[in-house]
Image 1 (cartoon, one colour):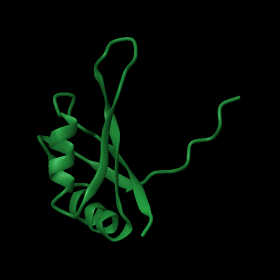
Image 2: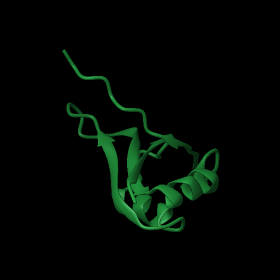
Image 3: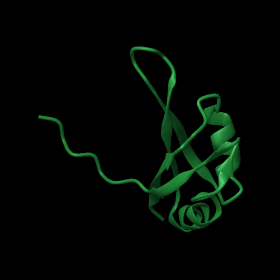
Image 4: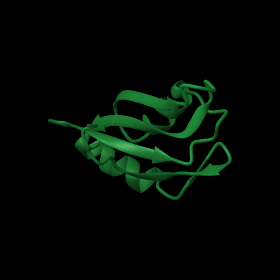
Length: 86
């Protein structure tokens, strides 16, 4: 079964990748969890990505989209492919 990459927005700046992984593991196996960090400041940019099996990803969207995580409301959707940089 192919993995599905989810976009997760609204992540609290104090959250950790382990915390994000733990939350999404409630929906199924997490293959990867990443919080995007600003290269200049070293701080979280407030969004990230979680990679899961397709069935678990659908469940995670239902479970976490527009729901509160560590005090902030998350926005969870299937990640779009990023356009190649020129």
